Length: 207
Image (tube, rainbow, N blue to C red; front, side, top):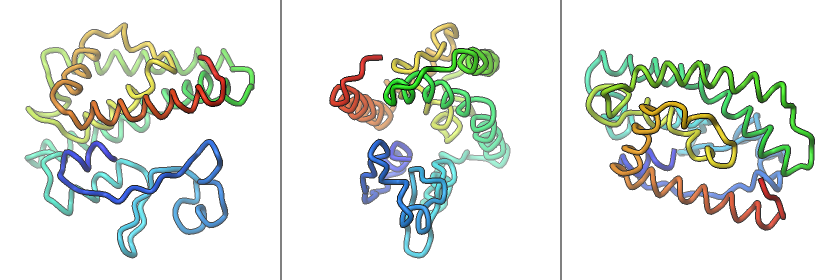
């Protein structure tokens, strides 16, 4: 969400919510902002939205952003990849992050069978991405869209969660292009890295 807002030239007032301290699990947060107890959440007047993809589409509608695609066909392709990302891609990277990082922080034993299952799903999805990205710089059309932003999201945790992305050269080249071409994405990744590493160091956790 932060990356997309920067690229669209939208200034957001950011409110930090410490998930590790349970600040999103309070009754007030769940009743007023997000019943799932998760971030991000957008509050715009009387409008409250959760889920980063929905928030991004909402913000794009305010500024008529090309991140949704520049033609009707592109817009449907962008939505296709956004939905695919949620169902076939990010759900399994989240599972591995929870197992390898979350459980390590909490001192709970990892479920290796669950990790193996999720890695199999990630590899199956990554093969689809690698084929699609051959000869392409972007997921849809000739410019950055929300399809790229959604699918790139797990790269912010790839080093810590050890996703098997390095096995797919077109996927790696595509993400490298995003880092080099869009400072906002590189800045967001660096911010996530700094916050995570600071937290892990303060908790005395080594992955």
